[in-house]
View 1 (cartoon, rainbow, N blue to C red):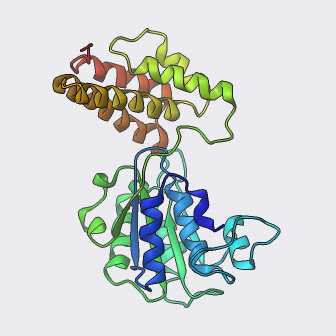
View 2 (view 1 turned 30 degrees about the vertical axis):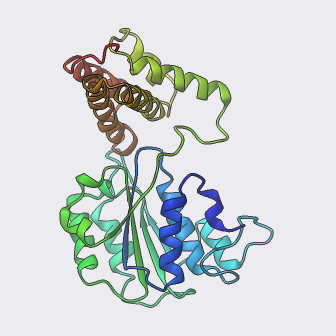
View 3 (view 1 turned 120 degrees about the horizontal axis):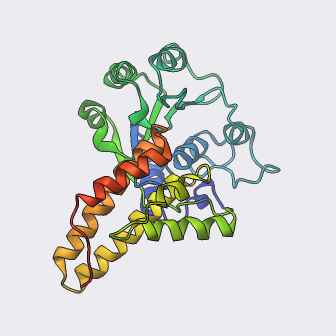
Length: 288
């Protein structure tokens, strides 16, 4: 069993990454993209472990803390000196330019401390403040040797085209709205609220009910978008193309607000209220 086994449902993306490692053709920068819930950061960590593993390079250790090699154990614990993750900070939930300067630019001129390569992971690339994005772009234009960048995002179209063009794209499938070990009652509540948000008409109390449990707004948005995608697929296969188009449009609107809630830390209740106003301006899906 390898580190890749934890990425169930991502066989195509995993196969692409493993081929690159096996053939020695790993680019200097990847862009991991996928819908909300896709395991982008998990995949980036798996990539780092697969390349750094001292026992089975290309596969990584099997995830058992008792048998992990030193390199994989450090990466899993977040303390490997050659694996740097840029995360969102502050009320604005952005990656400031100071972090790019101190965590990236200040290090790239030096060789890796322990491994063969240094890996920089950007948790959500659209959260890079404009100056930070421009600073990172300069590094991507002249990539140093023995360095790998992995930019993760659920909204690749919001990135600078020049950044996208300098990264090899790897697309991931949707993950789950909640972690596998989430409380079943919570999962049921999220699914029910998502189904309610996917309807054409909404109760006035819905934004409050979605926002009352901290951290549930983003999963509810994912659940609602999935419900609408199911309606779109069912309508399309039944020949009801207009209904499918309307369901798809509403799902897209919902996912655009997921970026605001999950990435940019928007107030959940206000975001849901604004989303419902937006949905009122779109054609109702209706029934076939």
